[in-house]
Image 1: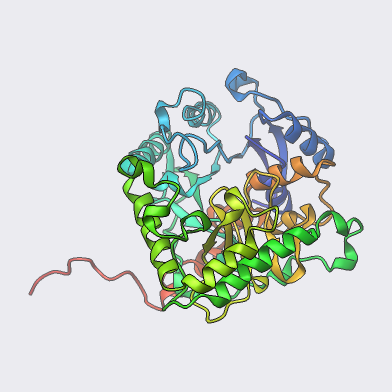
Image 2: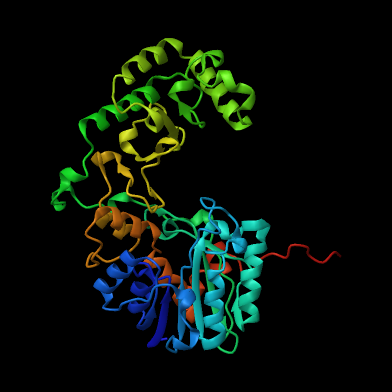
Length: 420
């Protein structure tokens, strides 16, 4: 596949385009429902994408060798309604891919979706997708491939499902293997700009009140006495006796999981009354200490006397979430992005671009809110390139992800070996 044509369905800002171009491909058609994404796409690639694919006739799409599509995930994502194919507006967009494939019969197709696609509806959604592609004439792996940028050393934990399709007359698609014990080390410094490289640095720096607010939570983590750091959400309002909890009056109406967390917070308070009461008095003086900012989710492992400034932080509806300082959590389609603890600032759009493996020459949206959203919705360029090479039959890549290379054995062991 030294030279080939491809179409870029649900193209976003061109994650597929970047990878396919690097592999020698020429884009002959693109589409996306988002007008701002279409502007960014045209600005970078000189191609004006169509809008709604559902109103585009398959015969009006140019012939192509490869179909690319990161079809919308709302119907399959845990963050959405999880209605799958019953979702009339999103779940059926897979069938627009299918009708185009049935009409044009491209040699290859590479599709991507959220991790939850693999288990949605007890596996029935994946079965419908798999069987539909096989019936259309393509070799597809029996199980969905779940892969993340941090599996190849890019410091972002972003598991996604990749679906490789090879037309049956072109060739086979060997099984894809990855050994979870061989994940390479990640360094967030690999994608960070130096502060001197950021012309509008003050725009991303934490404000003094934000630093004070995080310092308060840092003091909490370093001062509490417990066998291990709380794995449950810490809610400031629940750091008291259960009967004094603001939710006590409606206890019988609370769901079980909430009761459990309230009780755990109360137990933590019981074991640290003097310290926590003094800490709360101080913390409440910060005007930011309310709502979600009065909650904490420690997800950075067991560390004695931890320093949150050595980690990655996110301001979530569930609280201040602290992750290990080794790689970033998945970029999401919201303006509020990760805080780099060591730099006491937010990630910049350029650093988000790097997390998605876009080159520094890529021109993102002039509005930061749109840039963050678009990178959060995009696909990682390096992973597209990897799976395209595997699908196209690159021997080196296929060998690297063979069972022997990953596990050091010639073949998988038989699950039920023949009895003597």
